[in-house]
Amino acid sequence: MKEKYNGLISLVPASVDLTIDWDRIMQSGLAPWLHRMAETPQNLEWHGEGDVLAHTKMVCESLINAVDWQDLDRRSQEVLFIAALLHDIGKITCTRMEDGVPVSPYHTAIGDKAVRTLLWRDLKMSGTYEAQQFRETVCALIRRHSVPFRFFDETSPERRAVQLASIADLVPGFSNKLLAILAEADIKGRIAGDISERLEHVSFFREISKEAECLENPVTFPSTFSRYAYLSGRNIVLGQDLYDDTWGTVILLAGLPGTGKDTYINAHYPDLPMVSLDAIRKEMGISPSGPQGGIISAAQKRAKEYLRKKQPFVWNATNITPDIRQKQIRLFTGYKAAVKIVFLETAWEETLHRNQNRLEAVPESVINHMLKKLVMPNVSEAYEAEWILV
Picture 1: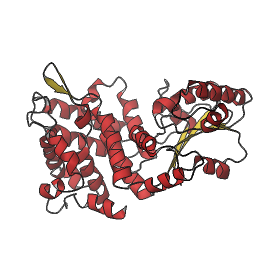
Picture 2: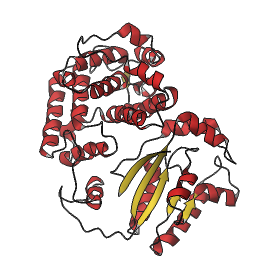
Picture 3: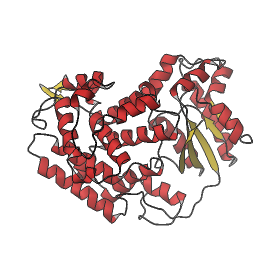
Picture 4: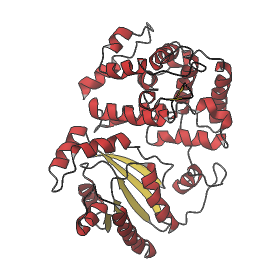
């Protein structure tokens, strides 16, 4: 992992000479992606510079020439440069033609997942705190890089700024300041007629973040319950201290197959009852690739029995996307339970090794597919969220 990580970091230009070695970058392990960027067209009204790679090069040059980037610590410079280099990678797969014009819907979310897979699996950046934090800071920036330059359109700008800043509760390297720097470079790295207007949006984002005291750090809330209420959209004033009416905690496990969820539960929650989708599948004789409707219904029925009794328990499943997690969280919070998401991660090779040693191993192709869909949980999803390396 260290060799691949160092190889990636070595692509970042030194802040003293401010020269990007594009020949070296185009011959690096990122080359296949970068060449595909060169083959991906863009709408010339907003990207007069041409294809995605042409834009990416302009963004990176704009970034390293920005005083804000030059004034950052070295780690933040590295994270931002790699994010800028890969920020539009999602356009490779999602660009299509509509009425003769290229469009790239959802390219930020698609890019987040593509870069996570690239860094996690191909560059072995998983299983250690350093690798996880670098990877997830880059991914968080990529997923939200277009938010600041549309900030006038936000219905609740303060709440949105606070929600974005809360990413740093689990990813300390992230900040609204870094996001603004990336957004400004993205805007300036184009040939278009709306650059001044978009920069005003980013300036507004900066000002709102400053007023909410979350430009460089997440907001400190009076309590965990108040944080969850505000971040999840409840109509309360920032800083309001709410009465916590929850009766106990439901642990919602998340993680790829082979990360050791059962082992972790036995070690940390041995006294709590468990609702396990794998166990129910085995009881019902249904494979993971078969219809899952009956499995979920049976699991929710068991969960409701615990919830009615106000009995804390563990919900054990992969839970790799927000949509899947929220289906269960809405059920649990409807019964006034607090929900803590515990996401487990291990190194990619270790994940595959542990999976192979299971009694019922999941096909490696399935794990690969799940990694490509994975969205890391954050503190706005539940009462608490924690990432654990195992």
